[in-house]
Amino acid sequence: MRNGFLLFLMPLLAASCTQPAETSSAGLIATEDSSYYQEKYRLAYHFTPEKNWMNDPNGLVYFEDEYHLFFQYNPDGTKWGNMSWGHAVSRDLAHWEHLPLAIPMVGDTMIFSGSAVVDQHNSSGLCEGESCLVAIYTAHTDTNQSQSIAYSNDRGRTWQQYAENPVLDESMKDFRDPKVAWHEPSQQWIMTVALPTEHKVRFYASSNLLQWDLLSEFGPQGFVDGIWECPDLFPLPVSGTDEEKWVLIVSYNSDEGSDMQYFVGDFNGTTFTNNNTKDLVLTLDEGQDNYAAVTWNNAPQNQRLIIGWFNNWKYAGDIPTSTWRSAQTIVSSLQLRQYPEGIRLAMQPVPALEQLRQTPAHHENVQLREGDDFLSVENIQGTQLEIIAEFAYEAIETPTEAEQLAAEFGVKVFKGEGQETVIGYDVASQSLFVDRTQSGDTSFNDSFASRTIGLMPADSGTVKMHIFVDHSSVEVFGNDGYVTMSNRIFPNPQKDEVEIYARGGRVTLQSLDIWPLRSIWSAATSSSSVSSTP
Image 1: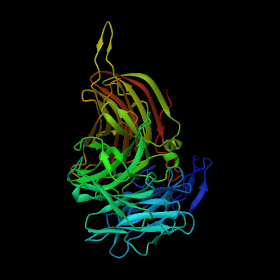
Image 2: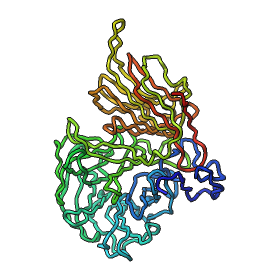
Image 3: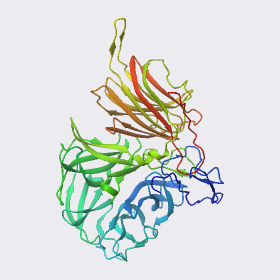
Image 4: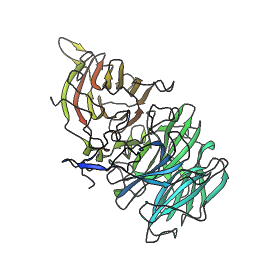
């Protein structure tokens, strides 16, 4: 039922939660416990754990009609620790089903980040049939990090540790986060693994997932402060051409917080070569809260699908949630596109999210001037919304009036007295920004109240903002993914108005669509509403 509206009810961990009571006519599963996934700041259509701490996505793999999402998980508390692999699956990348803990911590060895593959032809000899799932992860102790494997012969429901672990041990304290994928041209498995403090990644090869040979190293290049983590290497076609390039994503964490960079280049089965200058930093997400993002192996139609940890190490342990902590971003698809400045990655939300849409509000060709306060008087509000707004900002000359170009325009969400989160475009700097300085509770960390900025030239004078709002988050895709910004916010949910605004002149709102989005966790009615007035 990949395109239906069935919402998978998760196994309930809390003793007060009960089993499904009824199914509504819309096909949504209802529960008798109205508090399930209804806590303050709980996201309605993003993946969050039922309880406790979560961080990096791990082991992303598609197998037998299921998208697997493993993740760093503490089964014993809401702070980082006891790292194990949690587990969930989806058939459509919108709805998620919680599964039991997959790979638990063993003794003093934590199960750090890694990846999973479909061993199609039983190269490892660990499969009971023609194929099985094999996970490759970092075994972490206080003094050493090495790479180990576990395997599953029942579609990922239970896992066994390989008896001769580790499969790769270089006797290093910082050597982690293996991403493994099959390299068809050389007919071998390639592992990309981080050397965090050296600002490098290493590439290894194997024919069987059990013995690994060093191929080469890459780095230091790009951003070289702090540490490097969670690398991912994959090919992508350049849209509209016959050319294929390789992309290397590397997350980095420094005193300034968490972020991700990527390199575009070539990989010959042994060595990765960056096609840009070594000091060029290409950022995957200009927001504050997208880290450790990696892509799915074995995705259908060779899609390159990505999800990230929706948080930042600067304040991850202090965000104001109680029984649960952290989330994953929505799933996006990646493309390589040719822009005037070079070949760059673009991210777009997956179409599967469209099934969550409810009755929209639509507006078009609205002329805005400063002070018009458009939509705040139209009863447009909500805490779980999808918004697509397209603006044209050319100056207009008339015989009687010279109407100046707007200096800034955009969308405000979670707006109310003393509160707003602003998604705006600054014309002078040609930049998209998200301002959360007045977004609600920012008291838990001195650096949280911030404004994130991404350069987004719009020579045509058209700016498109595709915005996802979900209780304590805002994700923005600017000009079809040229710029992406992911930011957590913690607003007063009672202040939930939406306003389209302009400053310093006139702008045309060419089109606006706002959809309330259904929750993926229960049949509770959406807390969002929109006016249907055109």
